Image (tube, rainbow, N blue to C red; front, side):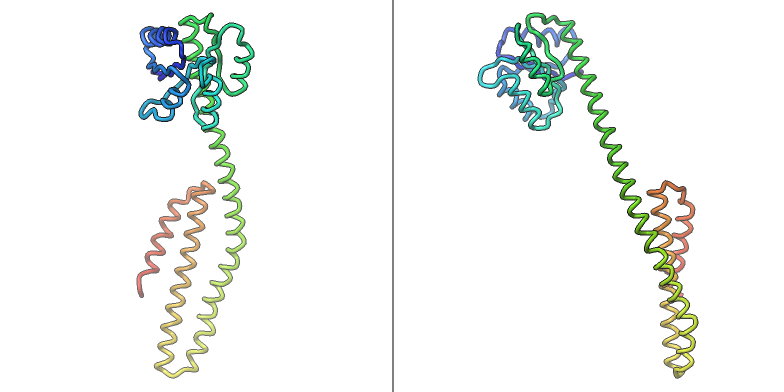
Length: 244
């Protein structure tokens, strides 16, 4: 059920239109007698969200065009249909240029035609919303792909250095560490060996963690099925964190 705001200083006309829309087509209709009252209803509508605004063009103090400008200046996504008098084609064209969805001549107004305009306006507005959301999603995907490419470039750049550094650490511990230990007295030798073993465990843990992070990256951003591999790496990390 659509919520419609009818804005017109002609009380008789507004009441007739509102009552017919309520009774014949079961729309929820609110009436504003001035453009300023319409602004207040839109701005402080509470739980009432207006799907469509039907506004007369010529009103004292604030015209329908002024109301239309205010709606768009405040980025309110409410479709507006302008109600114009005879000989107001220039006004209708101006309203369409300012973002009005449609216009209806008041002297030619009939209930069935107005319903067609209301339903068509609502459908067009829903299409615009869906199109806007799709465009935002496409842009977000594009930005995510760009960020993913940059992350991949960084990972590809640092991974060889990390692997080389970890390999050097393990090689130095295994080769030079034992040579150093042979030159030490027994108490010092055991302390150094214990320290080297601890460094070796930390290096292995670091290497496993890095591989896990890389696997997580591939799963999240490259859309590879890495779940089982990540579970295995998680268990491996947990095992390596247990003190020997």
